Amino acid sequence: MRYYTYFPGCSASEGGAKAYNWSAQEVSKALGVELVELDDWNCCGSTPSSSVDELGTFCMSARDLALAEKSGLDLVTPCSACYVIFNRTNSYLRQYPKLKAKVDEALAAGGLEYHGTVKVRHLLDVMANDIGYDAIESEVKQSLSGLKVAPYYGCQVVRPTPGFDHPESPQSMDKLITSLGGEPVAFPLKTRCCGGSLIISEEDVALGLIRKLLDSALSNGAECLVTVCPLCQTNLDAYQSRVEKKFKTSYKLPVLFFTQLIGLALGIDGKTLGLNTNVVSPAKVLEHIYNPVNYMTTH
Amino acid sequence: METKTRSDAFIDEICAIPGGEGIRLCIQCGTCTASCPNADKMEHTPSQLIAMARAGMREEVLSSNTMWYCLSCYLCTVRCPRGIKQTDLMHALECVAVREGLSHAGTRTPTMYRSFNHFACSLGSLPEFGFMAWFYMFSNPLRAWRMIPVALDLLRRGRLSIRARRLTPEGTNQLRAILDKAESLGGVS
Image (cartoon, rainbow over all chains, first blue to last red; front, side):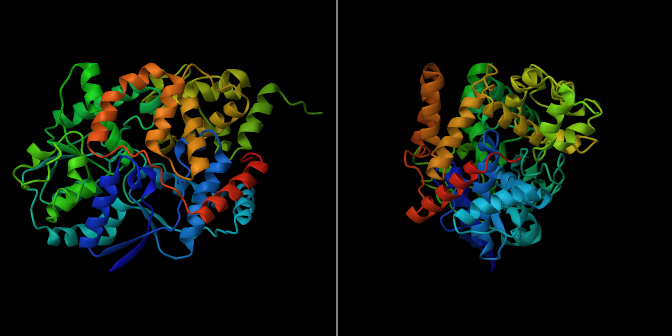
């Protein structure tokens, strides 16, 4: 059994991406990974906040890091946005002593201290590098044979700091899909931005970016697309109908969390993985892999 | 005696912000602009904004819409041959613009970020539905109306929680104490 401190983030815990949290937990359990949720965590600080109140953002994420430091375990998050913010805080506290002094003083007001030792990991990194492709392959109960998948990494899981994969041409999810028996299609826009939170304030701009991704995935023969971030999933899945309306196109491309895809291959049932919460239904695409009696009952 | 020019003063101000110091290293190669997915939406491209900052055009830079179209995708950052943290530089400029009340820039993004921050700080977590409803109602009620189909899709699939995740009372107080202290310490620089 491997142990990690787990940070689901707002979106996967109580927001629109609960299926990500459920499937992450289920898949981890099946692969011998114990995710111990960080007690009483707060919002990671987030990119929107860091654009209006930098010090406050560093302090919010430093509180989580200080709480996580007590266990001595790596901090794992399935959310690319949380991942980037925590890593940014860690590197800034190391690099800027004056900033660190201020953050330390603020933390002390809450009776906390942070020594900068928490290693922040993305769940994709843990799956690919700690568990490993071979171990995952050996657990496959239902091969995804023949399923053409567009591996969409998005931005913040691979950038800005050199991490576990290439910043522009990552391969870990491609290999993961192969180990599940699926076929990763060529996807040149795999690390291009989905529009992020600008979907809220500048919808037209974001819809244009989402359209490019969907076009690229479909033109390369993808039957579905997998993501590693709650925000990417929401933009590509829930706003797909808005893109279709705006550009008078039709995609109907299911967008799954990578943990949902792993879960299917491990033989976990669709309902447990929250497949009924996907806006564009994956039922038809998954027909030949998974055909349960009732997991799509809400459709 | 050395006299500070207008441009020196602004450059010094930016360099004092963590992540902003790289601005002196720019060679105007334009790699950031060529990499940016939103460069065509910006009044000034990322490299132009740097050139303007170095020319001391403080007000023009801070009231530009450029940084508010930054998606934080960090493509410019990983490609910059001079190692400038472009995305962080954008965040730094955004914070200064907000402090100086210059963040209108013809985009709703600053308002959206501020309301996001308000919810995240006061609750300790972000209630997606509440935050979005609040933002749409106050920035553009017509859009709230247009968003109903998306909201219904999410609601039907159990993805719209009205309830916000709450910290324990102790956790809430602790976070409040930390953030109050942070506020009393001024900004990052």
